[in-house]
Length: 128
Image (tube, rainbow, N blue to C red; front, side):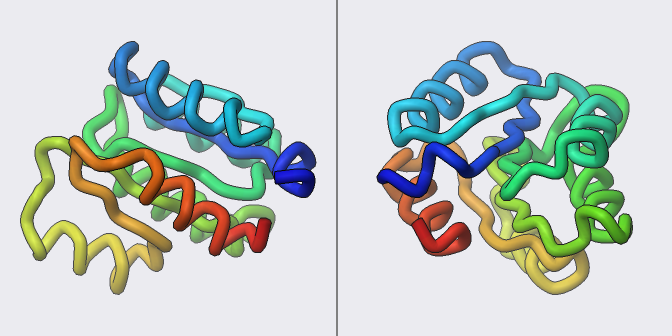
């Protein structure tokens, strides 16, 4: 956990309860966390802050999480930033395959999921 303090994670989530659960779990692990509540805000913060990793809900106001991931992976400054999706609605294998293959996402969690599973995946991706 010593290395996690230097790692920055952007959480893009519009639901206040979802925000609290994810942000609190990541802060408890020692990560620096910033929050965006809409798709466009998530894209803007990713470009401005260059986080080490993005956790993104699929259904967001104004732009979907899929669009957010597409923009992050397309931009030269952020194209190597890992993106992990979470969704309560897009629960089908097509959504997961689209995220992994077409968008080059690094994880997909169907809500509700154990936060320990997401934290474990984040650790793998960030090597902390």
